[in-house]
Image (cartoon, rainbow, N blue to C red; front, side):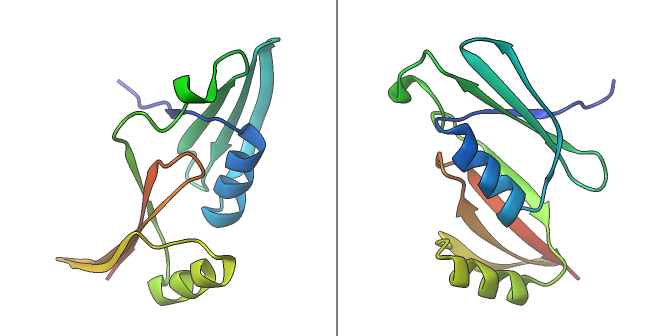
Length: 122
């Protein structure tokens, strides 16, 4: 079995796209509109790990995004530098820095409230 991607239903695809591109550093792999009421953006990291952002245009905001207890983790090279960047960009750290056995992390949220862990391993 091979892992393919994580899917996140979003309420504003452009806002989420900018977050995952600018804050997390993912790159666009492809962008499609398979139906009039749907848009999908596949984003990848340098290792080919993929996040799929899906916007169902015909659903109400209440029926989309942020309803599940999801947390995605991303490795960063320098957590202190990352924290400075987050503070500069006005992105709230909801937890941390938290020490763990092999490093430390902070948690933030994406535009739809999905928890994102940023990990610095020693």
